[in-house]
Amino acid sequence: MDIEFTSKDILIVFGTNIRKSRELRGLGIAKLASLIKYDRGCLSSLEYGEQNIKYITALNLARKLNVPFPALFSRHYLNDNSPFIETFTEDDYLLVFIENFKKAMIRKQIKQIEIYSATDIQTSLISRIINRKSLNPTINTLYAMSYTVGEEMCALFSRNTIREDI
Image (cartoon, rainbow, N blue to C red):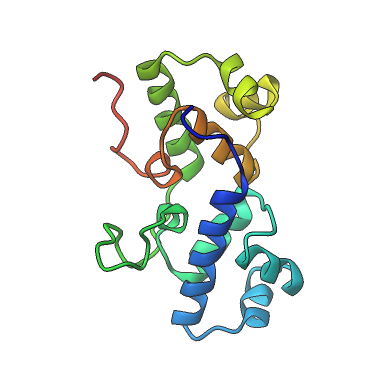
């Protein structure tokens, strides 16, 4: 890896995108927290990149804010050159992530043990996610996985973005 892994990066991107999306929709933080049945203080911490969350909570946020789920992980979301559509579309984003992750692993010839050595995520957890035994991993864990294959999370959550052969 070119740069050292730090999970804080994606939490800041994700939190900023949540805050901007919430503000664009005229929702107060207490109202959004109530809509997704999440603690207001934790949501505030999340918006400032200080709170890790589970995949399903992130999905619920995208759904309630009506924003494209992969876009929440993009550094370019809400910029003028954003490639994302404007609304939430229901999909099995974790399955899409796993499929794209596996393609990237094959293409770059990366083994699961290398993910552990780069990020300290246990190989058993990576295996459970890949084999769909863990259906609600944290955003930090998914970011660690994306980091090891050198792909942006928004790409791994998007259909038809990762090719197996290059």
